[in-house]
Image (cartoon, rainbow, N blue to C red; front, side):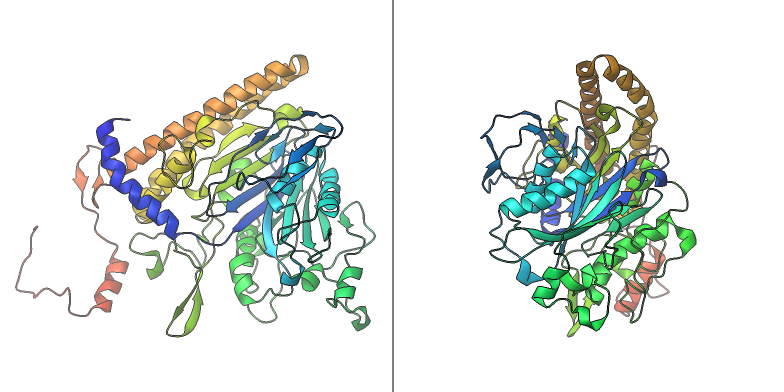
Length: 547
């Protein structure tokens, strides 16, 4: 970059950092899970938007053989904090992000649950638990068993969670909660996603009643019901079937539905528009029916379809965040936190979209039985808000990570960090959305579609190499993953330059480089005039020209 141009951007960068800090909020996430027959190419897919106001770390953890008596640090991707050590497994598997070399992948959303059951002294936080499981599991079912056994052995220290767990053949969601201070272990239930279905979860328990005699599709802790009876959360004498959510997550009132169930509704209404899912449940209407745990999409979903589901702001619905006076003059979906606000003693709430400004990263995991593990498992990764960023593929077998995606720190802007460059683009877009976002969207489409078009060719070559020279296949996929990510990073740094150059001081430059006035939308101007009667009125006899 030219030094002069960087100096010109300095003021904008400082504004972007301030805007990011103001947009902070509570930890929250969204997952979509796609069965292999619900995808266009037979992929099992898991998405995960980690909506936390920190800079999460993209990790690669090599697998290997370990001697008896070895221990391993307990830490996740949120920070370098070491909570303790646990015995190491005799054999561990390599992990890239949140997918391992056997194509086992995970995601999560925090559901909170009963506060009295939380035990902050438990050794395993949710992210450290997930990393340990991925290093040890060769299948989704094995991962579920490991979540249970590790928590029983070492204690669980986070709030209640819903985990997405998938391999190349099947996908599950697993809901779990602590047993309370001083008690190791968890109570939990896991549901297999039907192969031709999808599901979604977003910080609210989804599982209610479930069969006790279908181990092919439902797994659960042996005391999931008896523990609820012991604690007084469920009374079988009332004759009602046991509901996991009602027992362990009783607070799912209107505000929780608005913030959480709305995201599930938006995934479902886009994936299966023919079902015409009602908005009544997530709007908190009395007597409204909850959304099904699983649905069949109208058409099998391609990878880019799933990417775009993670970019949702309720567009095209009555809750479209790019519409209304609250979207500002330029139709921005960006809302400062907190979600809940008060005016004249009344409580109100912004919509909570899938695509969130404070996302630390967003991923789409892809696992495929039709390819060797080294080739079939890929995590499509982007730092920041998916709506303004670009996914890049990282294969599960790679030996190195792209430098820009591990560079930087949350407290200091860096031109060499993909996290900061993606955030720079998003923060340049938020306040002038209708002008800037089309440029971002066009760049996304060009880059992602080019990568997806190249993917089958790359994978065909990699699969042939994997059959004869696995080490060379890993090297090939590492080179492709790293070079592609570095190319995306360069593109987005160039996009930031283009946005500032083209959209300067409220003007938009045309194809000839001439600055053109844009003004404001008439609908917004009408509201401005109404809000300040007479302030902007010009007497009819005075003619105005440019000043």
